[in-house]
Image (cartoon, rainbow over all chains, first blue to last red; front, top):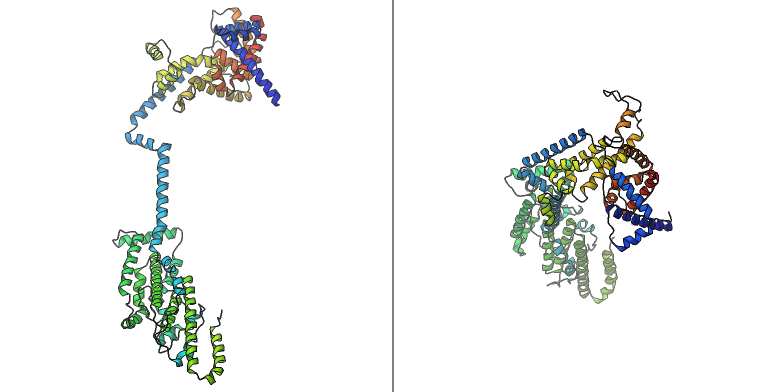
Length: 421
Length: 201
């Protein structure tokens, strides 16, 4: 149908409607306005009269009666429906009416929205709580730039010249080479202050680092690569053994039951927080004052924990998540303490030793950024120490031998400083 | 206020919607009033719409109204709703009857007087009013024949308007058409009926 045809149809419909309206007025006995008269004048009067006559004849026709059975059926159904309606109103208790009201779309939507908001709030609170439970690694990461840029402190007294060439030998800052090439400070140089063992869980880590100035320990530790803390490894093993899927939920339920069975109504998260707080207090109590008198005790603390103690620690924190949190916290504390030790170092040798321990601790903790910055600082400190000792040896060497010694020492120094990677 | 007073004193008939609201609240007598008000016109509409059994259409339409009373929210007039239901039932019935063999007019109906269906139609279909004269009978037959010749849409509109008394707006709502379209169909129906029944007018 074209647009023209549609327009014509619409116009025709208007004409038909006008005719029908005139017919309606005619049969109703109405003749309202002059416009109606004009319209009816246009339409053939005979046509309207015929329509009116037809209407009268049709209206006079009798309508057939509906069978009486139909009325009985309909009214019986109506009575039954009315009785059911009344019975439903009688049987509706206030509780049932309340349930019906609750199940309407409006209250249902409101309830669903409220639940969604609560879930969203709880989901947002979970990361915040986990972030607060983590060690202050972010705060610690803000410190390395000052650590790396800090100039090496000048030694109070120059080191003996005889120990200089051999002592400066390990200058390779490669991460993997740090544990492999053990620090060999001169015997005269003061040893780096070994940090006390702050926690049971990091005892193995301290053992892997080893005391700086203990030859026996160095000999044992040197060939071994850098180890992750034993606690972390143990946690990883437990995490691997942890069941998945339904078994995982059952595992968590068992953990919950274990907590409940211990008479503690706190949740796992709260218990982990309490354990972390108690460990923090314990660490603060064990923190050394940094004096020389504390060093033997600190070295003793750095020794590997006895197996019984490790087992006790492992039994104390059976929850993998809690143990991971405790291990991360301990690693962060260890890094912070080594960093403080580096800043407190009085001599270049002390600083170098502390930096090496810091590199090892950062690698063990998986803190690559801190390890990199510490390596850079270590390299700078060693270069400064080599330059200082070279200058001192040149001053002590007679001018006639200085020309011979200088090239060999220079080539050896360059060879020693050449990075292996 | 005046309409309320007229309604209270019984001068103005209670509207269909008010009666149906009473039925929704458990008053079965309201449905009785509604049935008596609309059953005959509904049957006439079903008959003109081509239903083979118009009483069945009336019964099914009112039963649907009773069963679905809770779903009527009053957006439309009760009469429009009732005729929409009846119209849909007529459509369904005509679809069923299209594939159903019709009964033989010569077959006995099984009644006591052993009359055939053709005899019963000849005696009953015009009406039961014994006082009806011959002219009325002849006009009835001619009218039924002329209505049968109308297209379905025009016959439907004419039946709803002339036999059931619906307004054009209600017819437009019941048939889902424009009101002007309904009036146009009405004019063509009038024109064709006038030509077919010119001997009686």
